Each structure stands twice: as C-alpha cells, then as structure tokens.
Length: 282
Image (cartoon, rainbow, N blue to C red; front, top):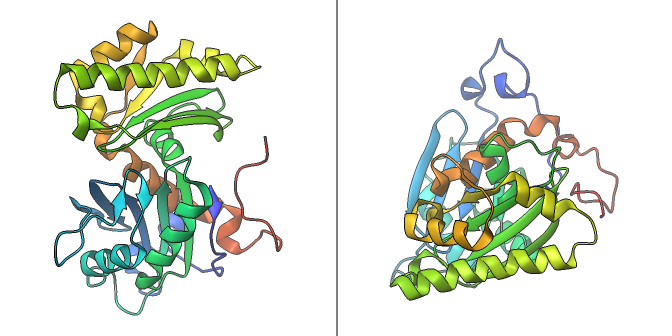
C-alpha cells in the first residue's frame, strides 16, 4: 500500500480501537474508500457502507475521465467526485481516503488520483493495488503466493501477490465491454492465458506455479460471465475461484483497509522523510 500523503495522528472511535466511542459519532473524523474504474465508480463511507455505484462520467456531455485504467482527465475526475461526494461527506471534516489503483499504471495513476481527490479536502490519501484489495475482500491467505485475475469493463490485470505485495503483473486493454461475441470472449480468455504463461516462464522462483496450483482468484465483472470463466478454466487447466460478489470486491477490500488504517504506520506519519509506506522492495 502506497502512501501519497502522511496524515496527522488523530483520535478516533471504534474502528481505531476505542470500543466505548463508535466512529460514526465522532464529528471530527471521516473515512472514505474509492474504487474509480473506467466504467463505474464506487464509494464507501465509514459508518454508512457503500453509498455509490454509478457510471464513471462527468457532466455536461457525459464524458469519460478514466479510460482503460488511466485517468485521462484529472479536472473532470475531480468534478465528478465533487458532484457525487461533496454533499455526502460530513461537514467540517477532512476524510482519510483509500483509493484502489491499477498495478501497472504506477506513480502516474496515483499522482493523478491524489490530485483529483484533493477536491474532497482529505487529511490523507492512501492508495492500494486493486489486486490486494480484492485479496483482502476474499479473506485470502496473503502469507502464500496468490494469483489475482481482475477482469474489469475495459481492463484486465493478472497480478501475482507474494507476502501480500505485488511480485509480478500483466495487463491487457480488454474487458467485459469488448465481449460482443464468442470470438471476443475467446480472445480475452486467450490473452489472460498468455499473460499467465509469460509470468510462469519469466519467474525464476516457484511462486507463480504455486499460486496457479492453488487456484487463480477471479474478480471484476468478468468473473460473472460463465462463458468467459469456462473458457479460461479450459485454457489454464487449473482451478479458478471467484470472489463473492466479484464486481464489488475491490471497494469492499478498500473499505476493510480503511477500517484498519490505524494499524498502518502511515496513519501516524511514522515513515521517515523519503519513504512512502509502500511494499518492501523485491
């Protein structure tokens, strides 16, 4: 998990370890989890649960500020967030925000997301790879290697997690909106198979093979497509496990990270200057 801004230490309610004082009653703090996809944006607010599951568009014109996993219009993304969430957050509060991010867009996506989220006046912004959020939502054993296949509307990522950190990743600019016929379904399943095969060939350890033998974890709207999962299982010759409610797994995992953010050193600014609180180097 990468820290984009070190928030100040705060005293909060039950989520942060004070059972006698529930967080929703604390007017000085607020938490928000965001999953901004190319097709849909989902938001979860502490004390209220998931409050938004809407198309990722800006107005006027219903433009798409996020395309194929890339924020192409930062001001448009900020306007969208302000329109959707500005009036829903408690007044006179500065939320701690957790944002899911594609693995392979790296610093560019994180910096653009941070800039857009500033419209909500956050006291701190944490980013987490979508694959890790999915694994947390699935209650996966992060002590063992895990292969996550996240099939979104416009982007598919295959990510290998080792000790909970990203070890390897691949992506293709294909998703469920491209599945117009059996041929494109086959194309996407073959693309996923090729990405995993490439990871196996380039991995000088046994991590990818071990993770595949355990069964790839499926998430995203594509995990709800029987035609796609059937073809994928046939091409991989390995077990597949779909996360419950796979289309909302990322936001649910981000919400759990938000709830436990007090245990992360970044929540108290414990990282020395020059560090970002992310995963240890490989």
